[in-house]
Image 1: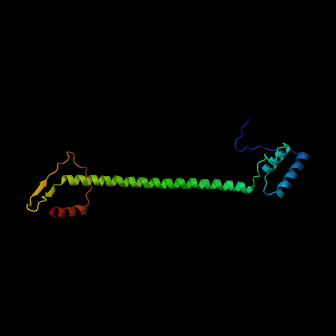
Image 2: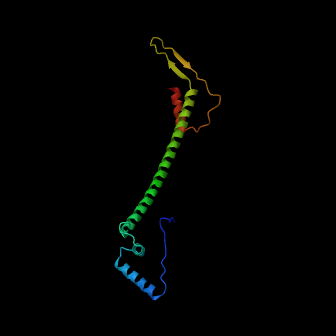
Image 3: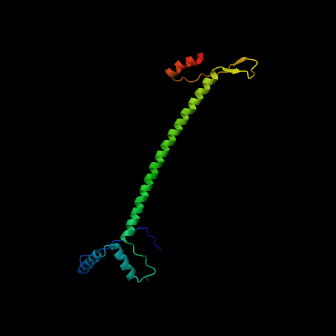
Length: 164
């Protein structure tokens, strides 16, 4: 059995003879009266009749409105695909932005951990009778931390913190 693709285009040739020209004129006249039908519809109907196919087997007539609905569905599918593409691009950008912010926060936390590790920690005894203050020096890392830009406001404030 021969398999056709979903849409098959076949041509009809009208020769310059009297019979073909009169047939073509009748076809044009018929199609002017039946605005909802196309030449393709007319050919299909003629083939169904000439091949003596019972009415129960024939497909229902496909009107211009059905084709318009199919075109609308196609347009809507294209619009939906475009919307999905723009949405995913926007969400991808937001995700990359959040990942960048998390990386910056991780670096800041690491920098603060290094600063805390380099400063001596003062621990006061929990008993109120003695006011012994222990100073615990923490070990420093053998590798110096990478040079960081120092904010001038922070450097001025750090003097006051050291005095406090």
